[in-house]
Image (cartoon, rainbow, N blue to C red; front, side, top):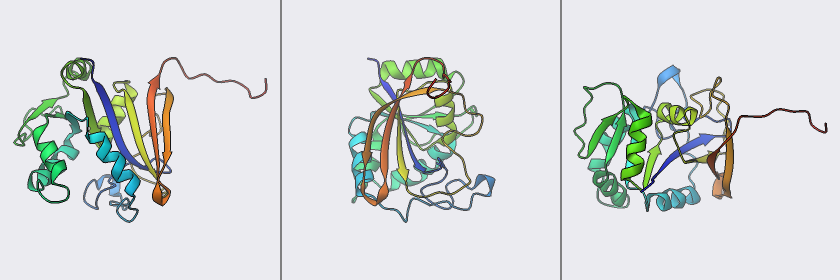
Length: 207
């Protein structure tokens, strides 16, 4: 098996992916817009997220996102979103952290992060679709090192002007291939990219 590493991020038009879900999700940098996604519901985004979970057989999460998920999903395994809680409970969860003492009491959780290159190679051999949900710091590392197979960006029609971005200043130059672009309700847009080979080239238009 050669599994895929899929990064799932909600982002604004100016590329901010910090704390879309709630005010206390990530307050670092005195970020004042936590929960910016909540006033912008989209059925299309909900459907595409659900479709992506149909093949998900493992999660790879950053420490902060893991703590949020571990505190929420085990208590939400019934009702309308219960199937998500059941799925997350069931699949293996890999937590990227160099802290060997982190709390991994959520069943099926394992720490990684000492050698991401070899660890991700092992995950590819073991799983079909490993999803990285949120976890912006981890996502930035995977993007910079090209340790991913697909980047899924759900872009929302809002500009924040501050916050952690998918590609911050100083991000490694890289080429990407657009796999698809799908417009949704509420002005949302789903962009799917794969890494492309080669160095970024420059030139003069019309030359």
